[in-house]
Amino acid sequence: MKTTRWTVLAAVAGVVCSLLTATPQAVAGTDQVPTPVLSWTDCAGGFQCSTAGVPLDYDQPTGTQTSLALIKLPATDQAHRIGTLFVNFGGPGASGLQRLRERGQWPWLFSAELRARFDLVSWDPRGIGASATVRCFDSVAEQQAFLGGLRDFPATAADEPAFYAGYDELARRCSEKSGALLEHVSTANTARDLDLLRRAVGDAKLTYHGISYGTHLGAVYANLYPNRVRAMAFDGSMDFEGNATGHGDQGTAVPLDTRQDVPRGAAETFASFLRQCAAPGADCAFAGGDLNAKWAALVARVKAAPITVDGETYDYTALIARVNGDLATPEVWKDTASTLQALYTAPAARTLVAGEPYTSNRTEAFNAIQCADSTFPRTQSAYTQYGASEDQRVPYWGRIAVFDMMACATWRRADADRYTGPWDKVTSATILVINNRYDPSTPLHGALDGAAELARTRVLTVEGSGHSTMLVHSACAERAKREYLISGTLPAVGTTCGIDRAPFAA
Image (tube, rainbow, N blue to C red):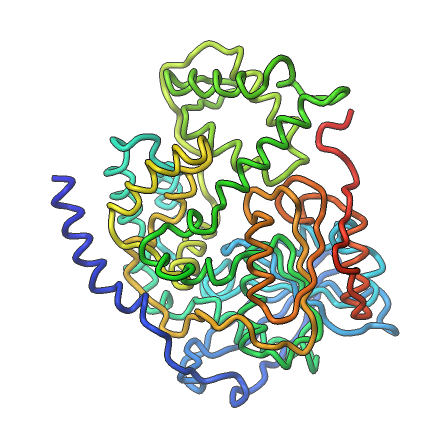
């Protein structure tokens, strides 16, 4: 029955596959589209909010319009204001409105000197949050029940059929509930929106800070509008060709994060976690003895039976997903170490509790945008094959990366305007690429590949562990970033930066 089900799904996938892998046609730009009018109003906390009307389909610029929600933190020195710094905090799927409220005044991300010279502006890109929201459920309760029941990845081959079926059902629901909107949420269309927003704030050229996925948006913009770049800082950067189509014929054969070797980044970051935990004087609850052996023993225990600590129950999938997620944020590493130690010493549990409920459309938007942007394998066999081989190649971290975008295997909709290259248009300014030495989400090797794909870049490496300098504090990196954004001054070739505080500092 499972095989029959997937045979049907594969047939459906084959119909859509040609759309998803076809070379995109030339599409209308933004020059003939009227500039949106922004009416900023106070919206608490020193922030201002507005909306902007943009075409839903840039092939029909005078057709149906959609609305984007924006937020601004005004420059503190308006007399010496340079312009607007547009910020995309990553995802895709994260709300720019929420992120700017939460993080716009983090001094290690946006120093007082930087905030003095620029209005910080972020927005909910199309499909996300308050902007033409992708919906896959009729209610929050239905959303929480469904998404809370999905696993991060199948622990074994026997778990795969149910996992595939769950994400195919998500793809079906999204197509049914969001319809044609899914055909217009690619990053290319968000880049076109960004060009209209640049015009709307009165800037002749774009000043931009992209974090994680935001670097992909920046790279697409830089290649659509290479002469409109004033300054672009990419933080936690990506391999853009690898993300969009894969290198060579990888796109239809190799899962996305596998072909970008994200597991190596996770493995290197976890190795850094264990080294720093074991260092003399480290405040790390998991320290003591051979930590690699201790970790292997813990993994063996949760594979044998789930373990409950502090009200949460972990099986193998839950443990790997928890640690994989925590690796991005070194500020939580002490808590991670405490959980690992508690699991290591705790008795086994009998049951596994449901996952954490979801309360926004981030999951839906992530899948909608990523599935629109990238080429994916469309057959079960590709994921089964790499699930087995990656588990051997990169123990613990290889398998989760194979299955992390499973809905895209049978996604029903395609955006014909997605951008798949070229990536080497000569931009009017050099792009600054910042990446941590050990990054579990955007590994340094991928950032270097992406920087090489672009025409004009300068790379700054931060000697830290975690995902982007949004989560790894480095005053040195922020200083280099602000000097570049303010005056165009780039760090010298080969420059590295340290971090402000070690994760396990007492």
